[in-house]
Length: 277
Image 1 (tube, rainbow, N blue to C red):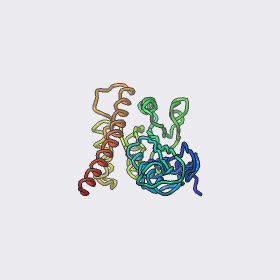
Image 2: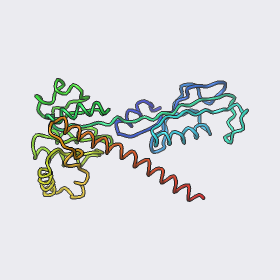
Image 3: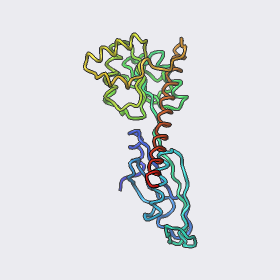
Image 4: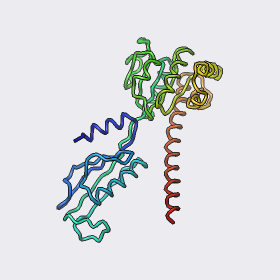
């Protein structure tokens, strides 16, 4: 049988969400013993079992809500037959099931290990992001300079993006040492599933880089994915202030997306409810 914990790792590496249901307490006769687990993926498929039947169906339904709300819950099932329940659960015992969301940790990829990249790493770590630094200069991309980084790759940024796991919880901060390197890195970034792609630079630089990318065949529509110039428009001067602006935009984009998803789900639920009236 496929291992639940290996599947959790796989799902998190894809940047997806799932829910883990665990039987945390039993009394008397129940379909499965304490400690039994069932994993519910975001597409509704399951791995493992907490006993089947009506109880499992109830856990599945609650798990799908946990995935949407990203909030844990606990369910109690009485299978003694003493309670008049529509499920008709009669096994002789009671069972408590804990359901918790399994969330992937967002990753900030710093493409360019200069002064601003260094400052971004500090603030990103405080904000709860994992950090990967990519730069082909070992004098810049090293553990002594980036002690907060979870991973450091001493490689060309543009050549690296196709070889690493960029997914929908990936946030790319492109701050390479030159226009051409930024441009090639952006082209490769647009081929990934990154949720956020930001380019450091002035409006003039952005305009030049975008014009060159269009000449190289990049569709104009694709450029809308890029946040450029990167960061929220606040007055900045030092690398640390610029890094604050960058991370403020990343946090805002991340949180606003979660709010939009919840509003969309609520709207869909309302439409479904109305259709049944």
